[in-house]
Amino acid sequence: MCQFDAFVFFVRECENKKETDNPLYKWTKDTIENEEKQVKYKNIYSVYVNKQQVYKENEADSIIKEIEN
Image (cartoon, rainbow, N blue to C red):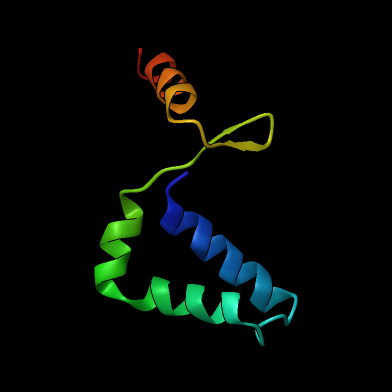
């Protein structure tokens, strides 16, 4: 999932729950509305395995290679 999509999902979730009065929501909302940051975060991806985000680059790269092949 690209980071931009994750940010959009987070903002919608906060808005649906009426939890918009916090710094993380405000930063994320500002980020998705900024065109320069949109480009940046649309090119950053997160890989999830068993509903856990994978942070180790070598593990993520291995999974991506499997998907691409």
